[in-house]
Length: 228
Ligand SMILES: [Zn+2]
Image 1 (cartoon, rainbow, N blue to C red):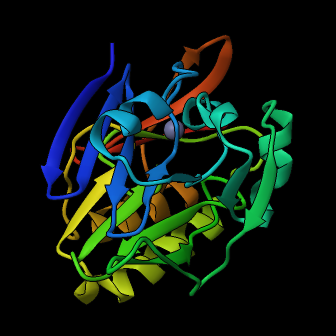
Image 2: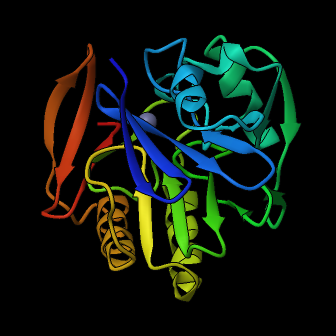
């Protein structure tokens, strides 16, 4: 079952298990930000709330964000994410987007911000007029996956610092996991926590996650799964 919630005029979140995706509508077209973990018909939620043409962008290409991509021939994505996308079975033509690009839905410009680290081609989108940041998995209050192929803690920290430096441009953050919304004051906390983890100053707990041995670092505002 699709659980569609309206956040504001022309902005919707759709919950799919522990992941969410977003539907944004402008005067000309609509855009899905990601396409769910399980639902190959994720586009149906968008069709329920808009009659505009629907396009898609991926914040990144981990499996839990691309299940419904098959409904689209063309997908906006960072080209740095293509390898991860194809490895996860992703199909279609990638329309590359990069830092500073604007996707305008019609009176609703969205700015692309490169935030590598969680994956090489992770991006955030800034809904400029509405002062909303869509942060993918990078800014969130859940446990952020930072173990395995493609993760890079140094880049992740640099990307958080970049978002922190532009936080006068947004008031609210819509992430793909855990609490929604979160707020810009979470960003410096994540910088602090991820630096502690990287520098070996945080206390972790070894645990098994889907057959992988990982270290879990839990803070009161979020956490990290890292390689042991
Ligand atoms: Zn995710």
